[in-house]
Amino acid sequence: MEQKETKEKAILVGCQTSGDDDLRFHYSMEELEALTETAQGEVLVSVVQKRERRHPATYIGKGKVEELNTLVEELEADIVIFNDELSPSQKRNLASEVNARIIDRTQLILDIFAQRARSKEGKLQVELAQLQYILPRLAGQGVALSRLGAGIGTRGPGETKLESDRRHIRRRIDDIKTQLSVIVQHRDRYRERRKKNKAFQVAIVGYTNAGKSTLFNRLSEADSYEENQLFATLDPMTRKLILPSGFLSLITDTVGFIQDLPTTLIAAFRSTLEEVKEADLLLHVVDMSNPDYFHHEKTVNKLLEDLDIKEIPQLTVYNKKDIQHPDFVPTAGTPTAFISAFNQEDRQALKEKMEKLVMEMMDPYDVQVPSTEGKLLSQLKNETILRELSFDEEAQVYRCKGYTLQDHQITGQLLQFKK
Image 1: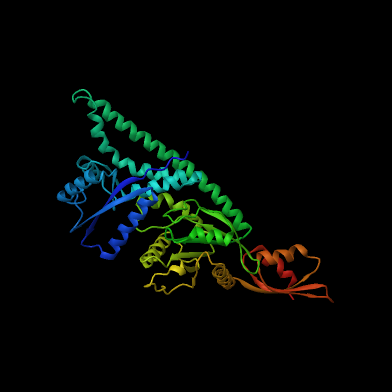
Image 2: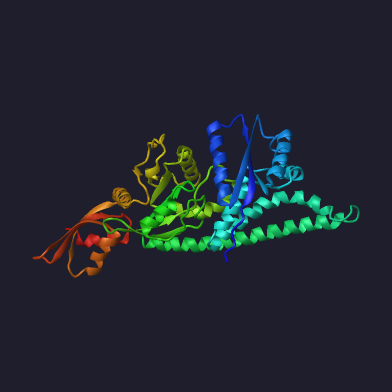
């Protein structure tokens, strides 16, 4: 018999300061709700306070804290989730005044990441980010530990326990960093090999839940995890993608981006996004049904800029056109495609558009290949974009016209067959 998962009952808390734009704040609270649902929580109510600035001791004002505590008691909430990263002292003060578990946006995202990570690297990166988050917040628990007994004489062990916890965490952090650097070296070697074989690489990037994995699965006939949830994918996957002419490329699905991504996470997921640096073409997927699509697009472009990948050609793919938002207006700047990832014709049109962009990065060739060169002919079909192929009976040669990548090994081989 299957046990039904009991959802934790959550209250969300946001503080809108004078610098926060109303709409942005509203969307970030909505996103917090979506994150909570992704983490298997049930949102009971959202508590919002407008203030000049966040309260240094308790994030929201004293009166609001009392109101929050009353709500917790009334609704029997298990957990209170704050929309910003709380400082160690804010968290400590709130925990002593509110009768429920207190977590912040960073912890919530880390929790989802922990549920989602599949590969060894994904799991290690999540653990690293969690430990880096816990370390500065350990001090708060030290006070509690030192009061384990009845005051005098029991203080020592608590403090030493705190110190040994800290030491243990620092050791574990070093250990994970070592393991991660080994994995990164492995990935570098794979990349080198792919570069040597010069496969054309496409990377899908975009805001979380924009439909990247759905598109990835449909383009590559893969089985990446797709779900209408935030952060469904955490591990980069690479598969074959065959463009309409038969040109073979590799396509990589990446972790979703999110605004105000906690700093501990940016560092941890940098190496997951390293794949993107090696791409020859980026497909930037934007969910055109989301009212905040414009900010999502900006967030992704800003993160790409931080990763120094502004130079890679980009195709903006506006997805979910069947449920497009009424106020949607595409952003000018990059080539665009409008699709619904589930629609076969849209995907075909997208592949043709990609092929056109790939051709713009290539050099044309026009060669005559003897009919005995079977291997080269099949390579031309897969490794270049073959536009014309005709057989000359008399000379027993194939006339081939098409486009090839400048630094691909096949380009050198073709020189001898130039007309």
